[in-house]
Image (cartoon, rainbow, N blue to C red; front, side):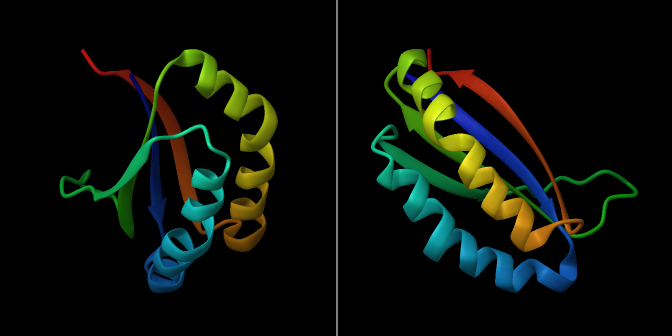
Length: 101
């Protein structure tokens, strides 16, 4: 199984709105694609010395790399664009892939 991990640091002034939007709009849209089995929202508790805002790791689990590749090919760009348009300049995100062993 594969975990598609999206780590996002959001500025404090949008944090409350972002978290509501993430839970009520974005994640349901991602899950509606049918490629993921489950998700978890984790707040990152360790921070860098100069880090501000709030950091979250959103973890989506899928069966295999083929499913993830198909999700990224068909849906990721549009969903990332919606996030960027809504919160442009107010967040930083990066993605990592993990394999459950």
